[in-house]
Image 1 (cartoon, rainbow, N blue to C red):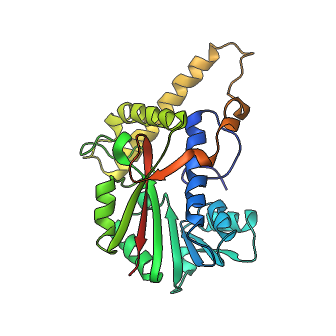
Image 2 (image 1 turned 60 degrees about the vertical axis):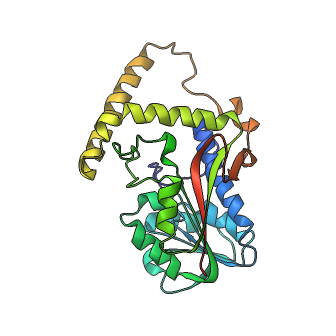
Image 3 (image 1 turned 90 degrees about the vertical axis):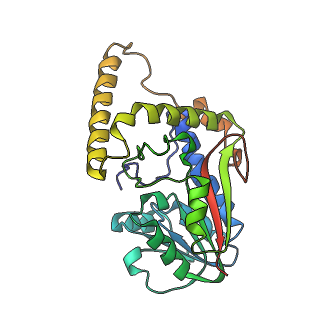
Length: 275
């Protein structure tokens, strides 16, 4: 499966600390969810490449990973195998009920977040839990004037806006922040703050989706061209990239924290109970 940036694919090479941080966020979120799934029937909604569904299967009784993409499902089924794990497309899901539903870094991709939330509620058993993660708009966008600069994101959330949406369907909603006490989170915050300024002309709130994507892709081509020109003037014997051994071994998913309040955070985790 081609790595387009839309879905996280596990690898062990990172060119900078922001890339490593984002990878650890994905791993840590599934590790956090594992404490809820012991002996439970679990649905991983928007499973992508399948690594997270496989992680959940280490603790759960049964895990089904689903994705809108047939290519992603086929990749996941090939890469990750376990007797209590299966993958299918969302269209193949049917009317099964689950004790726990995880849906990580998905809600920002869906055209209708109300329909998405309603669908997940219907798939939950009474007393079941829905666990959602998504980026926090705080350091990523200028509120009210800017749309997401990730071309795969249709909408991004504040803690209040996410909770407001989820409380339309669940009485019990807890919003946690995802971040770190390490310098990794500071690198990611620095990156996203610079990114929102650089792409502001291409992401104004008044633009339709197609124009936003066109402008962002055009800006990316120009940036890559300028980068290529700069690289021509570099010492040809200089390494073209950092190696993972420079920094990756210093960190693990345990550096990622989940709490209601923290000084430095980048993402949100919502835990909803289906009463």
